[in-house]
Amino acid sequence: MKLGEERKMLSLTLKKRKLSLALFLKDGFSDKKLKGNYEIKLQGSNISYKLSYVEKLKDYYVEYEGTRRPPVKHRTGHLLFMNLPEEEYTLTVEGNYYSKIESGVNTGTLGQKLPVFELKLNPSMIKGTITDKTGVPIEGAEIKVKERNETATTDKEGVFHLYFKDIVNSEDVILQVTMKGFQTEETRTVVREGETIDAAIILKLKEEFNNTLINGYVIDTSGSYINGATVSIAENTEVKKVQTDNEGGFTLDLTGTEISTATLRVEKTQFKTYMSENIAVIEGEKINVPSIILERKSRHRE
Image 1: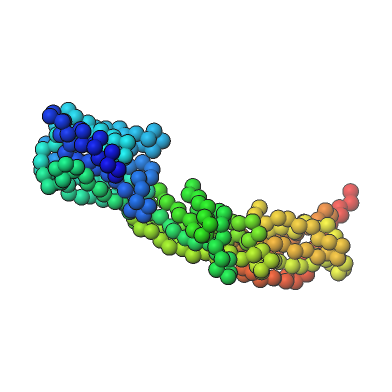
Image 2 (image 1 turned 45 degrees about the horizontal axis):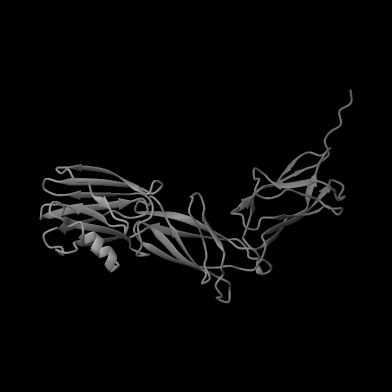
């Protein structure tokens, strides 16, 4: 705190307005002000305060009992409590990015000139680095948490920080990392309430990555190749449909999907729809399936 700010805060120690407590809450990782919404409770023998901070409004809703004086929000981020009886208070703070913390505060033993009390809250977060296979940091990689709203971007050192809201005990999450020129990478990890988890992710260049492919041919009952048949993964829209070429060949690209088993669906006008048995899919491997035989539809004469 700058000297000028100290003097302004001390100026509140007047004849009828004695500064009893200057409370400052810190993020335990960044040492800066808290993120998100949070709630503060200060409980004494006859006085109590409840302050609910709303990040969107950048202000507090305040409730208090046993006193006529609400706390004052100082521009340094301190909360100033005036004319408190000198005794032991229970301070409780919890926020949607942090684990709940409780501490005792004795206003009789704080500094008489500047009774500052600082409290650090530990966030639920992941600190990670993104590099290529040689260990060079990748700047500008985007990290998304699947099925949640948290996102981050790496800095010049390839470092990113992800804060997580409303973690109770722990939660399994999937991080999806994307960067132009690199293969999208997904990794599973665990976020723990009030802890910082380290993660190191290596991205592969697209040309270095082994694609997951299903290759095959489509023929009729006579053994002739069928051109223009539509081949897809049944009940799946994630993998793009393909058409067989002049020699009945096709390749389905499953790279980057989470498909572990696949059922092929083959369709062609004047032929019966074909459905394969389940095919085991192994990431990064090419799967060659036996030739698929389509039967012609029966012709009915009137």
